[in-house]
Length: 142
Image 1 (cartoon, helix red, strand yellow):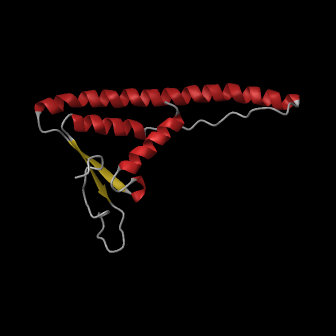
Image 2: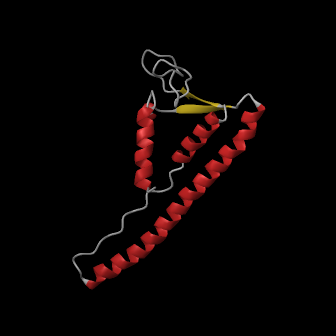
Image 3: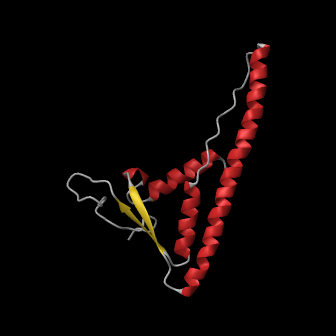
C-alpha cells in the first residue's frame, strides 16, 4: 500500500470508531488474555507489529531514495530551462498507526481486550468521560 492508501485506510478505521479519532487525548490499555492459549498467542502479535513497522520504515526509505533521485533530475531539468519539469512529490513519512491497529486486532484475536479511556473534559461531563463512556473497546462497540 502507498502512504496515501494507508492514510485513507486510517481515516476509514477512525470513522468507524464510536467516538472517532478526533476526540482528543485518550489512553489505550491492553488487558491480556486470561487463558494460557491466549498468552501463547501474543508473541505472534508482536511479530506482526515488528514486520509491519519494518515494512513502513522500508517504504519510507525507498520513497526518500526515489525522491532524492527525482529531485536531482528535477534540478537538472530546471537548470536546462525546460518548462515541463516535474517536481517530486514529498514522502508521507512512516505511518505506525496502521501497525498499532493490526497489533490490537491480533491482540483481541488472542482473547485480550483493548480499552480506551478518553481524557478530554467536555462541558457537563466529568473528566475521563466522552461520548458517555469512560472505558470502551473502541474497535468493538457494545
